[in-house]
Length: 415
Image 1 (spheres, rainbow, N blue to C red):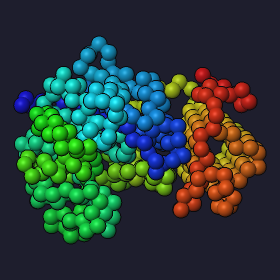
Image 2 (cartoon, rainbow, N blue to C red):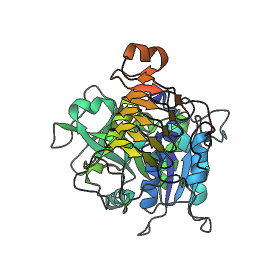
Image 3 (cartoon, rainbow, N blue to C red):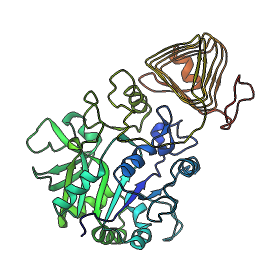
Image 4 (tube, helix red, strand yellow):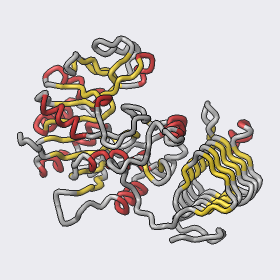
């Protein structure tokens, strides 16, 4: 093993995201827009690239075209260095006419890619969480403990732990057991109020991974958490890395330490957007020392005409004319006419809000035109007849029909 190991990353980006429906009606979960200009997948890719891991395979599956186009447009690394790439890999079906059957099966079906590059370590990360992480610190932990497998883990309150895969680890991090969503989670060593929850991010020594995947395929295993990891714990050196100790440069004192969110439901997705707002947000998107990469959109700055905006994010290319916007995120090329009011909303790209529209605690997907005078978020019974409404009262208007250059009826057009 070299001092600077050769690392290959596999990002599991095939998630169907059924709990995020209707935002995933036309796109996979990692491709769902987030914040003012990002997609969910941008966060894991940014963490890897900022950590100087430049060899990345993105394994895709469900409704992948939107994600493929985003990677093509936004994530081109230096083409003159062949060892630096972000490559999209759909199911190759080399083992038969089957798509990926689970997380470990997805990696097993791509063992050829791993063996072709012969890395020292393989990093297997998910693509659907919101966080910043210096992966090099986790790699250093893996090497220091001579681990065969390292699992990124986050301490969570014991009362919430049954929603996660829970790790039973000693004080040194050595893993003794792993259970998916147990009704009686094992508390952390020395802290009965919290449990170690798996983040779904792993580092494997390559030889161990290859052997385990082949054995697992013979045994009919499909998933890391349910199958492969519990078996490896019995025979290999498996350690838990405490993510709460990870330090990313540029993080501000007011940010939530160890911020990590699984934004797999509409309510969690909405709440994570609210975490971006305020003078001292829980998760500050502006960090020049740990940039989040995404689309290189070339539109102009947003324009405001007699508008009132409070505690909101307004993205490029928008025209806010005589509207009032509060505690909201508005993505690019959104047109708001006079007397529009937004309160705690997410409005995605290329939407048009006509005169007098009122939106409260609503998510409006791309390409929608909300007609003059419409009210959404004020009458839950009426909203449920037309839209998806969560138990907490978040209304989701599904994606409309259009393209990224629809603007014929608008007062502006930015290409």
